Image: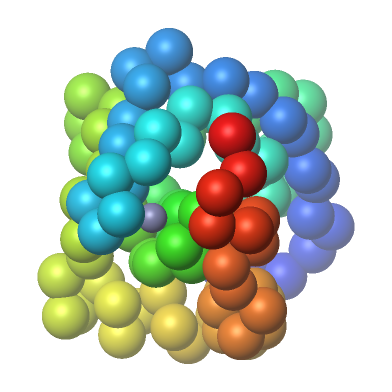
Length: 96
Ligand SMILES: [Zn+2]
């Protein structure tokens, strides 16, 4: 992730992706981006399941999948991702 200000935007993913680990629907999101304004997830963007905290990657059709080994290595270079994962899961297991 490049240096510079980070903007947060909330949204709803109409593709209604499900976590590849716990199967829970992750259609709401908070995006952290260097672009100001609304940001939608793109193919290859990292995500963290709000329920079980597993690291995922968005697919071209808006779904979620497990990252490859190479993707995981690249994503884990970002200290902010490591900090978020250290505090996961974000929501309690039975949250709606
Ligand atoms: Zn999950």
